[in-house]
Amino acid sequence: MLREVGLLDNICRAVHNERSDVPKQCSALAIMNLSNGDMDHVPEMARNDLVLETLLKLMKEDNPETRRNAVVTIFNVACSDQNTVRLARYRDGNILEALVELVGSDDPVLRTHDEARANAAETIFNMSCSEISETTDRMANHAGLLECLAITLRGEHTGLEVKMYCSATLRRMAELIRHPMIAQGALLSALVKAATWTNTDCIAEAFRAQAAVSENCVIMAHHHGLLNALSRLALTRGEGPDVEKVRMAACLAIELMSRQDEARALLSQNEGIIMALTKASYGEEEREAEDLRMSHMSELEGSVTGFLDASGRTGRVGEDEDDTSLQ
Image (cartoon, rainbow, N blue to C red; front, side, top):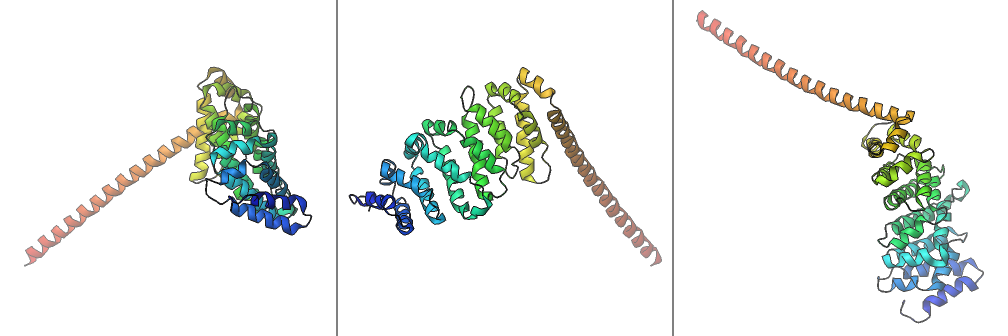
């Protein structure tokens, strides 16, 4: 169908020319279905300005199904890595901005946004995984994108799926952004705001990814609120493997930062960091003490069992001797 001359353009024109909602809904559904085609033809959609302009319009419609279908189309188009550059470039980031606005729309009245928000968050995450540096650079430098992801993680009315994609995107961007990139300041500010997220270890791992680059460590130590945020992650309360991963990643970030003299001096002056390291140290000692205690208990149980077995055998021998003497 995509090979049919003028078909896609005529579907798009119906969105711009018709005032009724029905043609827009049908057009959004038709474009989404066409975007599910093979990779030989889907890239043509990304090169068609009329299609991209139509999708921008549909993403702002009131009908939730129309919005969702438009976002799914963007997602499908972005599955081809070569298309991510075109989407990131279009009208100097208008498609990125539309996705960001949808992800950040944390309005309890608009609960019907949830599915479209999840699709938009997934699209942003998939674009951040692009192997094309221009795509990720444009995302990193897009005003408000990183901050929106961080704020969304703190949203009271935001679904878990949306938050999972937002945290994963921040982790991915932390692996890409480094000194002296302009976007690093925005990234660190976003991570500080997102440090309340402990459902997964993505934010803690984002700090660790930043600290793994030596040039970043001093900048991190000087960044307002970062050490306090990092210490809170290292002091995360709770039990279970997921919580332990958060604490471990945060402590690893602190350890990596401490390898730089200037950063180490700042770390040593932060009360939260010292408390986190002290607690981590005691926690390790407690685990070792518990392992040692269990080992001693096992040895003791083995000794007692051996003693009882030996006593039993001695008793039976004595009984046999008595029986023999009586006979």
